[in-house]
Image 1 (cartoon, one colour):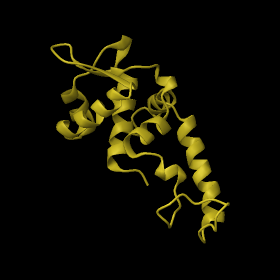
Image 2 (image 1 turned 180 degrees about the vertical axis):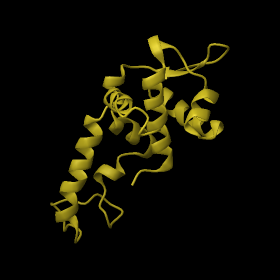
Image 3 (image 1 turned 90 degrees about the vertical axis):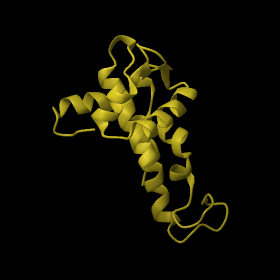
Image 4 (image 1 turned 90 degrees about the horizontal axis):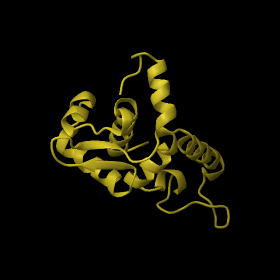
Length: 144
């Protein structure tokens, strides 16, 4: 359902929400090693999020990445739409276009539209703060 790029972006952002205390930055190698993601690929992903003002980045000895906003203000929806666009939330399951009631909808539109709306709602409601808290509550049973 989600691209690996979106999954990596979400995982890295949750990692930052859980580990970047008092606005501190975490270096890319630390994040990449903890999440088992190649650091050059992860750096590109995090730079995209930084350009969109979800993350902050700094170079140098105290460089790395951190959250640019409070973790409770950043939703999964924001991250996915920055990385992959909104197709997963808006496009037809079968066609390459947006499926809607005004035109002749695709054969599965009636069944898929409520599922798509439910997924969109879930992604908008889940923030990095709520996900980080849930991860801590699972005490390592769920890993990034």
